[in-house]
Image (tube, rainbow, N blue to C red; front, side):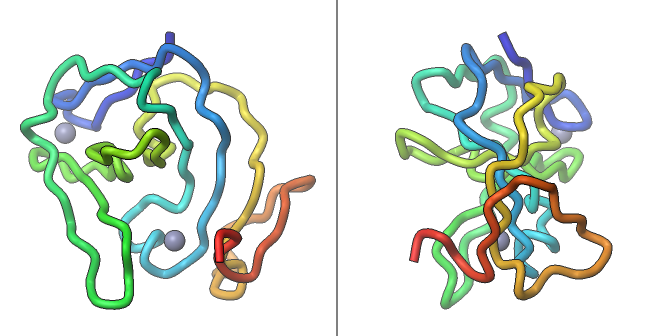
Length: 131
Ligand SMILES: [Zn+2]
Ligand SMILES: [Zn+2]
């Protein structure tokens, strides 16, 4: 069982199984929002323990389609934790333990700053691999 939480501990959840994969997005938006590193999790495996009511959504500006969630108390990035999709990305920083997954891919490498490292063996995409 994997536990997850925000910095202040208001938000708590569990994952009954490992995330599907670990990805890193280098777009400016993910960097600003603190969600560059994300785990894709399955809804079936995800259970809220507390704090869902403290999670706020930052709605996508024009030209973007993904919402971003954060704890209203401490500001921790939580990815798309309020998503209603079968699979959704959560900010890697929200997990309390390390599932020890290798980075599966890097996306939006064209806008990667030099201080964000590239993991050996990961698939590399200059833009969005889904388009
Ligand atoms: Zn918090
Ligand atoms: Zn991004």
